[in-house]
Image (cartoon, rainbow, N blue to C red; front, side):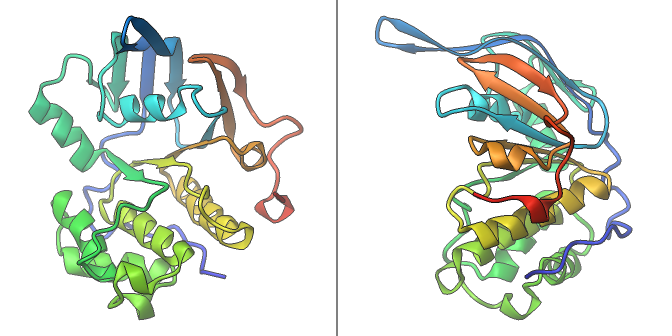
Length: 254
């Protein structure tokens, strides 16, 4: 079992300074497929104004990843307004959106997206470099220790297990110092034991003051969230705390 990340002062004093507020107002995202219009998101209103562990729950095709991409400035809505940490992404220039991605949001992908030609340490340092952190080598060493991979820092991705690769991906996101973490099915390719380790790492980040948004089809994961947003056919159909209250990660099973 990896060590849970304990809250600690950021290595870079700039970390977390930009806020974590997320606002989507009447957001639609439509795609044209031949003569058909696919409504990936259809009139979504969503507001997250404090640090929290948020789970966006829904089946495949419900709009979860589209929602995450809009929040993370990887995509733009067909209509409506998306604001992140006070910045209107809908009206932002390409350079402004790039700045948001460097300094406000960090992504954790299901497929890890590690650079195969770089070691674990170099992959994590890349995140710190992109975010223009002070002393990126110090930051990389620090976060790898915190996710329990200090002794594996010199290994390449193909030399690491799936769980270790996901922890490197999380460490790279943490190395940015950004206040918002967006995770797309972060446990989808992992066994239960490793998935629980990943959830512990993400839960610890929310408790240390970051906003963590996880999209998943796994309803069991939503039990440990502070807030569950349920999507169906591009619309929010439920929004609130988990039914029965928040569960302990140790009580999960799938």
